[in-house]
Length: 95
Image (cartoon, rainbow, N blue to C red; front, top):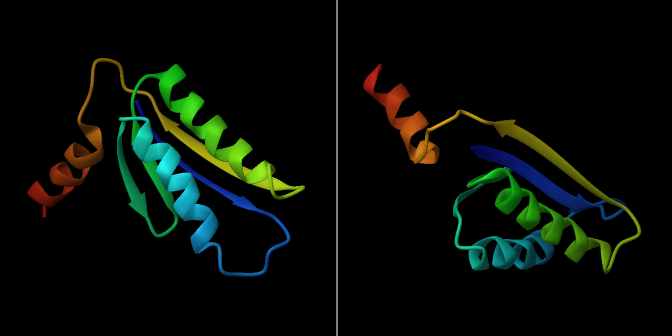
């Protein structure tokens, strides 16, 4: 499955680059296929692996902030893998 998520502390007006860089380190250390985008991160893996990473990211921010929002969008397509790039390639082939 692929999951798109974003997580950020509430109450900070701007300049989240430092916090997001720390979140990215957690994602990279997971070994899961992922892609950082301007609006969030896409991760591919099984349900438990992906949610474990997202939970770690959320809790990292909660260490320093009283309020953190995390949004999660799941595309669970049985038997499919390599979909982070594959879905984009499918669209490109049809252009």
